[in-house]
Length: 116
Length: 119
Image (cartoon, rainbow over all chains, first blue to last red; front, side):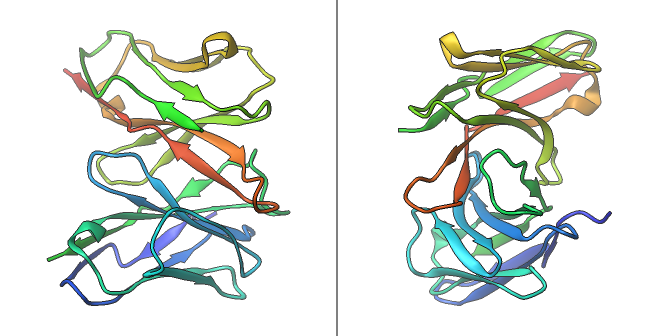
């Protein structure tokens, strides 16, 4: 089975621009979570989606938004980019039957965003 | 508050040495799950193990072993006879139920330990 895929792999933007990152979960998985990983730190939770509904949100400003499509793929949008948004954005999938905190999340390779 | 602490920022060993990566967690929940992930330079987080709070049995998988002790809130990871391919950043993570939103949870990660295995 194919793993979690993300696109693009790398992205360079300037301050104030908007960016859209994409994620396709493992086949059969219905939940997608997004994490931000700043250089030298552990990943920080941004969003969790299950069956196209937002199920959890981390401590991120409203400039961050996401959505999940009927095929369970997901997009993360970030508006009005700041230098501090430069990071590795990771997508994780889980849940064939419903999000449960005992489930293992499987991560994609990430999108490296650089804001200049 | 829920928190994961990995006090070792970086560890350097010579190939074939044993190495232990420490993880200390904080949570008031009685039911929780602990994870270890490996992050090679490519960036992808690779799942290694999951352990629930009711199972304190140590686990061994090949050269990897994990020691879970609730009394000290620790979930340490040992690599026996390390190899160069083990070089990566290792993350310990805690999963708890988000009680403010049904069916929601998140992984809380430590800051990671960078392991360098030299030939």
